[in-house]
Length: 292
Image 1 (cartoon, rainbow, N blue to C red):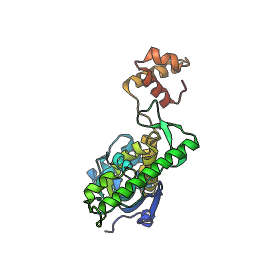
Image 2 (image 1 turned 30 degrees about the vertical axis):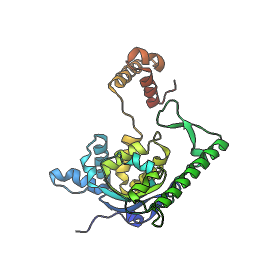
Image 3 (image 1 turned 60 degrees about the vertical axis):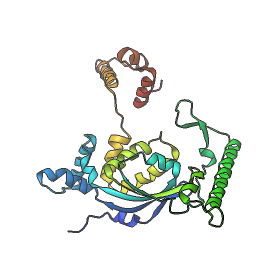
Image 4 (image 1 turned 90 degrees about the vertical axis):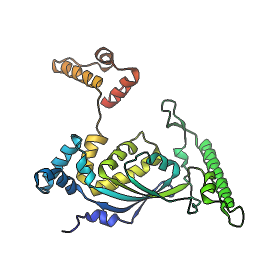
């Protein structure tokens, strides 16, 4: 029996997709496809893959009802080059196998991530871990120059420390002077279920821009690898909303009003029908696409 393959993915193996200024995502290998998901789901009663339309319906059922195990039958291995501060966010997803380039054994290249002027912004006042207000171009250029200067000065010190004709310091110690915008590389292998969870968080518009760049590239890859699974993921996860118990109570009450011909007043009904604080009210309205 031949190994199932996806001709589009086969052509992608070894090709690099550029990310940020020096980074990339490269497909190393993959296993499984949409048919493998369906085959795993049907194994309990011994039937194999059926028609494409039936497969699509089954995959959508699995995704919408959160039957996740069949999606674990597909795996992908990526070679990724990324800034260390992005890697530290990425590694929080502990459901993958990772092997990273080691600065204990090898010398890191003088390659740093320097944000574009348009991506340099002030701290958000409402989001404690994000950026918000843009700087004017002159200030942004000054900030970028500071980052570039300090990064290169740090690398000069790194070279001086590891130089065998100088200090000859151990690489595992010398690396501590390097900033987190220097690039690292790793092999990252993950199953489709956990990959989709990663994408649901890191391809989200609220994610940090730098990691979102990588997530969007991987989205394009998964869309070619398992198109039916990715379509279901977009419909039931990425472009869907989850409602709390309190929110569902309000939705039911509003639906009952609409059923008897009473037009809902969202701002009034939020306070009279539910038990949501101000933040929860704003988030609920955003889910419904209703302006305050």
